[in-house]
Image (tube, rainbow, N blue to C red; front, side, top):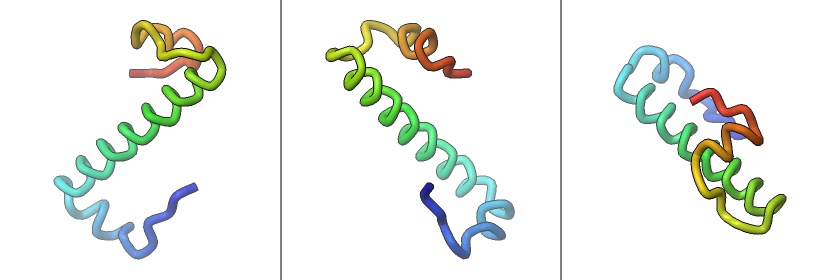
Length: 59
């Protein structure tokens, strides 16, 4: 788990920062899931649907 101490109030009061933080979190999650796919299957996924099928991604 990655924690951002001291940013809770700032995060909730600044919508621009919130959007940027959430985009960063989404990008990090996609990198982790993609690397997991590569580790388990030995190659990059052919399509985004492969990741959704294997890991149930909501987006």
